[in-house]
Length: 114
Image 1 (cartoon, rainbow, N blue to C red):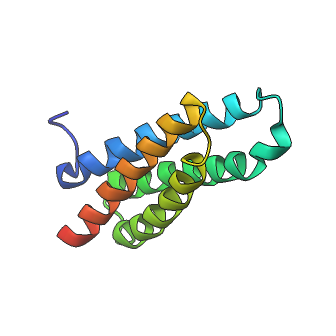
Image 2 (tube, rainbow, N blue to C red):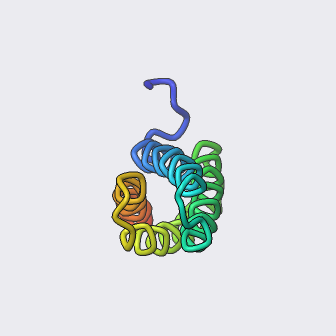
């Protein structure tokens, strides 16, 4: 992707997009679980996390002056989602937790580099 406007953000953009996809997958899979009510917090955090990851990726792609600030909040939401998904033994929750942790780390690294 050599034509990217803001290559300094690319690793974080990629982590955000991967996390959003993992969260979408997790929330959809959680809705298929036998006890959906038990998964309510996981589903809600998946939706919040996917939304903020997509927004953060868009801010970084545009080179927004607020990208770093949004990435700080994104890291917080990703960490909360990782903690919740990590409580559940299902493969989709575990995969989501890993993607969320990677995204949080990428957002924190970008904040540190700014």
